[in-house]
Length: 177
Image (cartoon, rainbow, N blue to C red; front, side):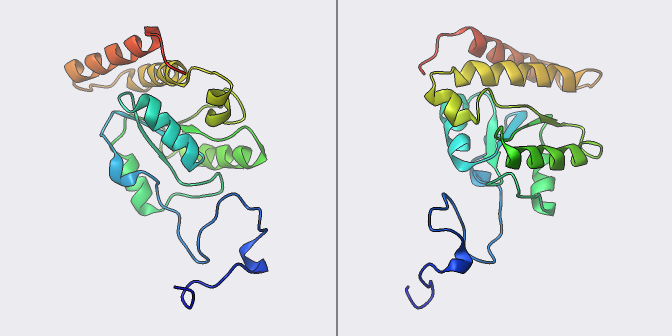
């Protein structure tokens, strides 16, 4: 494979870069193939946050990431978002996250189901590492956003009422941190 994938060089960036892809690569929604078709999608900034939310909240929401605050949606990504009643976007609490929130704000006029929320710490992984209850935090934000998004709509009531009960139970139950 060495002749196809050359060694690191300065064009790749600093050697201590945490994550990276091949030059010319394209970002896609991470966990795209694992969507469980919940009514809410949580888009987080990075893969670690996505895996952590999925581990603790797989029954509450679908979760995905574009793999960084600077990534942009393409037509396929945007078409996949149409199936969700609410899309909660959680960028890290830093300068890159600020730019990501600006991008999402620019889309909200065309896609009102997008909602930006700030993480409870620098990011969701840091919150969880500090002992935060990621499941309760997620359920609380999902419930509030869903209630707001569904005001005045005619979503099939039995399914949505069941989902609301699931979120309410998730906020009440004791959780493993």
